[in-house]
Image (cartoon, rainbow, N blue to C red; front, side, top):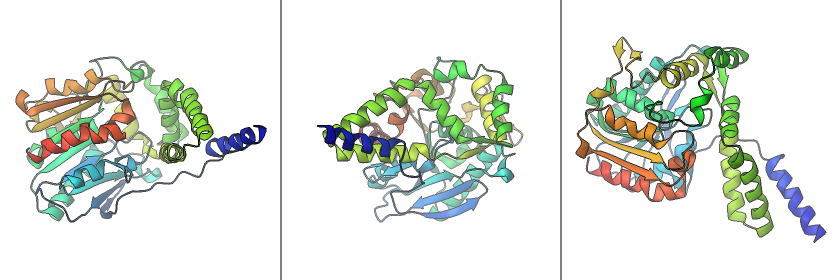
Length: 347
């Protein structure tokens, strides 16, 4: 009994204190078709393309790697759309360097447009199905309002659209003075370190990321659950790999979107044009998580109250998961995202 305890204890320490160095990875074969500043546009070619309008996925820029969209061979949003016959692309937002510190929201919208132009040229399609996960959701909504002629359908998942529609874990946090957030950027010499952002997310859900996680890890070790341990290590590898964001971009997001709720109040200007969600009139799909404490469902579903898409062409789904689970859990990929893919087929 003591021998087993010591063995389990050693493995527990290895999987926590002594875990492998996190590295970025992709689970599905792909190639980069555009490199510009902090954007690498990845194309996931396959032989089963049936639909002329390709899919572009924008993962969030919240301090983690964009392979969230292609997490594992059996847990990949990329493969969900491939299996439905779509040509799939993903924006990989790279860790910012000192030279990128002055990039703002406008620059990222322009980079998204560069990516979409590359997709249009590569595929020959005039319009794109665009999908935004979490922060990628407000980015695609913003982009769609500015370039509606290039978008076939819009999908957002667990994305903060109207911060005043409900309160969430972030609501009280962003009430801190802007100087508080500027301090972190100054610490990074003009960059926001993803390690600080990830730590903030953990502290908003302390029971889940500390007590429950380690309790479940110990139980998996005791039960010899090798499959569960492999999933745990894979998630820790992704969650532990953090990136830097341009300080200007980070502070604009905090101030304009979260503090001032500027997306729905029409307070954001891109290339001299006010972002107006009323310019969105394409098929729109909205996915939120019932247990999401980072972005509450009302904050996501509020999008339908600010766009011009007819009600019959707006589809809303509520997953039974939390924030990350809504974006990438096996249950959500099997159920909710399959429905999204089917709706894109007939868009």
